[in-house]
Length: 363
Image (cartoon, rainbow, N blue to C red; front, side, top):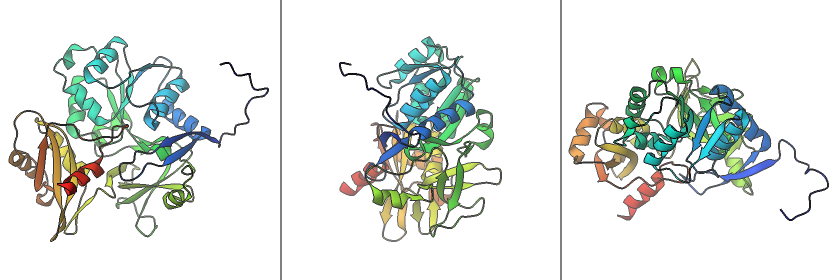
């Protein structure tokens, strides 16, 4: 404040770097993503347009504001629509519900686990959440059981899957709230200006419906990583960012995400996507959250292992039987670690499966 004013405004172009945000680091060392001014403005405009936000909307931020969800989906989006943003120092489900009720919150963006923690509060029904109309979520698939519980508790709430990453300045797809129930396994439709293609391992585009790596192009995609030309060259081709996610696009343009390439389990040639098994486990009343990882096997290559956070008394055998009733036999976890401790997560709320795999290796 004591410095003299600059004689002229700084010369800043719309494609100049506005901020450097570090990636989640769920599968490797975090990289500094260079978000340009135009990337940030475009993404904020997409949120406002697709979620129909106005100056009457009130949001609550309980995610790190130094990460893409906080700075774009919360701060810049509410600045763009001239709405109100209430900032919490940390996420605590009870306090979150109290503030949401008191402040008449209309719009939120959180990871699925945060919604689930809210639902688990014994006094959930005591809070007046009738003004809550948009529940954006991302970072992980929303378990079907969580969607059904939220819909039952708050009929006016539209749950909208927002799929993206730091490299795409957040949203690349958004699921219109009225379509969530009919397309519960999809992350939505490409956002305005986003081009999404599915590529095979040789860099050739795959037909509709086939599973491959998701590549994303558009006005929200960054140009590269700060001081890391090697990572930039590996992750970007002709403006397309290689997401590292395995997915597909159907004829109606709905995008599905099945797993991270590094998290997919190959059991004797049979591919198993962890999100499907985790969603089934979440439907059990004693399961708070779960993570499916590969367990090395000298015969089949990999087997399915589950780390499950539980409440109350429940056995591994009971959970395996639950899965067996709802999944093909080769997808059922063969081993399960039960715990009451929360799963390890990064600052953005994503589960660090790498840590779970390393912990098993150490033991």
